[in-house]
Image 1 (tube, rainbow, N blue to C red):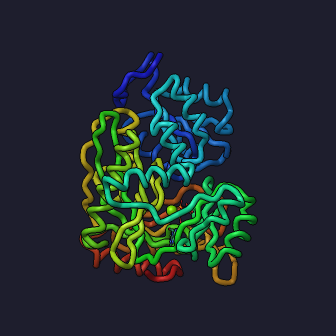
Image 2 (cartoon, rainbow, N blue to C red):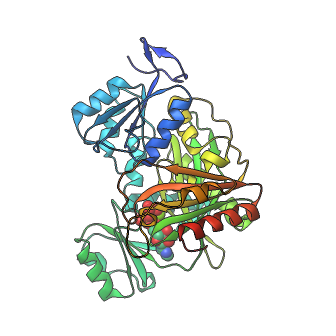
Image 3 (tube, rainbow, N blue to C red):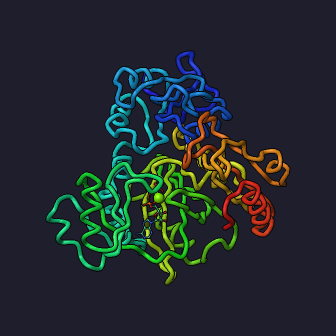
Length: 399
Ligand code: ATP
Ligand code: MG
């Protein structure tokens, strides 16, 4: 039976509870499952890893490769609508599922986000309306492209077109020799070379867009990256220059509308030292920089993902508390001399406004996202004070 939307919470369809499926079992899938279950939906997670964070909290779990046709058929049979938590899930798998079930975001939008070349072309086409363009860049697919790189793009950052995350698949290059060597090291795959820009801040915006085209936005998040990985997100009044906030919000809405996007979309931006705004990349799903919404907003990015998927109304979310989120990387599970340790949870949880989220990953590894810690409070001063105390307790560098 095809699904009719809206898929109302708590409804029975052919005698089975309304059920939502998610491709990918990481922490984003886990928090999607929490939000779906709070509304009374049953959930199904598909992930290749038997111990995946989302698989372990879902009603149903299918352990399989994302391309396994039998597993995809089983997923479609067990649930009434399907989303993804992971942009590198094969777009063909989403397209196959969409033949029988509502799927959001659409395979085509995910395919664009998977490929920096297509993504940048989309941003460039939206720039005319929004005025926010990507960094100057060149596509490098062969030796001839290397030779034609304009001098103005150096020094630059070479990024693989596909499968990069957390700064992986990137190299900073100062000149043409370094560029050629870095491209060889990346195996000569399709890449983009971006001009290295003088950043003042990094920020991101999350929007949710329904099937009817309604868009709601979350506040602009200020993000601090360390070693290419998000370390801290700060969200409160005055976190960024007002003009950048307005431009980032309207550019994100334009990017979502132009894609006729359905679901939760996050777009990352750079604020340059001259105050201008540049669009960096997008994620067709909830985003690490939006985790604070679980504790600081009256609808989280995961609630919005559930609503867009099930075709429920999208009430505009409101941030009710100032918030700072600290990412808890596996590094914190080791002391300075490399010995395993447990982070000081008791001391951290004694701080007012602390919300600890651990993703149920059993093995801590350096750079691995194990959880996050959000501080909520009445204003920026209060949350900064607590978050800095927490950073000191954790042995994290201040910010
Ligand atoms: P993510 O984990 O967000 O998917 P990623 O590995 O896909 O990251 P980017 O977001 O493109 O990569 O880049 C990672 C970080 O590198 C950025 O957050 C920024 O700090 C820095 N960076 C990227 N591009 C540029 C640029 N053109 N100029 C200056 N810094 C940059
Ligand atoms: Mg990024």
